[in-house]
Length: 190
Image (cartoon, rainbow, N blue to C red):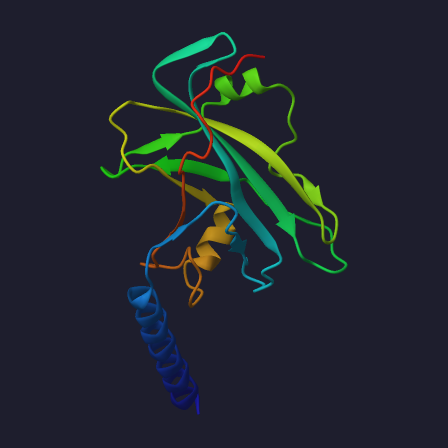
């Protein structure tokens, strides 16, 4: 009986691994346009939280700060379509990736020039949203910058790594936000 149970468990594991890798390898990278939402499903498969880029501005000057490249000021709208639950993103990680696969972290010091803002990790009432501006300091040679937003603790990423079809699963392609400039380059002063 024990061999039977172990055999079934091993067969299930192999079958699941095949499905996981097949789904991940057949996934395609997706570039999301302005106002096109990205869902955050988590391991409960409760895709009620969404993020979308609603505005992108570029400037050489932000408050008292100047850059040799360009500041990208990205406005992100976070929303919940849950009917009753108050939800929120956990430990948000936002990076810009360019054509050379260079990664650029948020410039938190530059973000202080925008004034007081709520954190990404705030709770959202049912069917509500909020917007937050984030800033990146990119060099002039950064081409085709795309924003990647992830959320969750380390344990969340470990669980999602083995969820079939999850963007964070092993070998799965990412969904990026294109950062097409929709406004003129402006001198942003506080």
